[in-house]
Image (cartoon, rainbow, N blue to C red; front, side, top):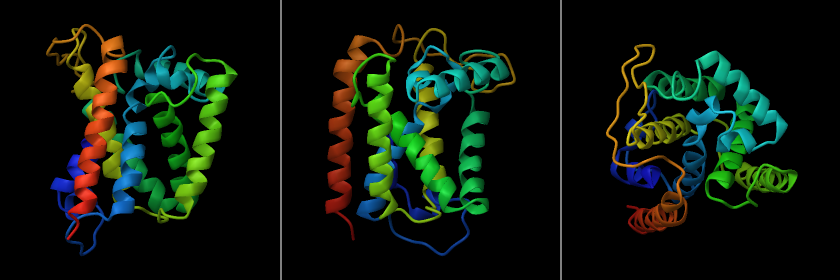
Length: 227
């Protein structure tokens, strides 16, 4: 929903920053639709520091061991990867990968973000077995092949999409009692504790469907009101 709202309200000059080009107006319907799914996937990126989190089970043993490594490097859950520095890093890393590596990087990132989106939107069997991550891989591969026909080699809006997804995750975690170290490496935590924890049943079965419906509504408005 955050992507649909931002893409509707903000000019392309902001969505495509720091790309230097003469752009005006808003993104087209295809970019809006692709951005919805990729931003949803990027919203799981900060939890790469959580070996028992959702992201750790996206690609089976590969993602599990990678999350263990990231957790060790970052200092544990809700430390380095739950900060403004991380948001800046993934945004700039996306921009750099697009411009220095090109289409293979873009498609690889699309596959990974789609895999995360499939898990985040509960489009696969529950659990961490092969039924779950096998389904994720199949759907992410299919989605990547589909997007290959529509997405450019260097989509200028993708760094913003990735950064926005990560930022939304941090803001959600700040609503819990544990909060986040937004200004890492400083130890101060930012918190506005109005929910017990993320990932609870209310969030999964009530808030998530409402956000999906809200996203579709904003997306429909964006497309039908294109100039």
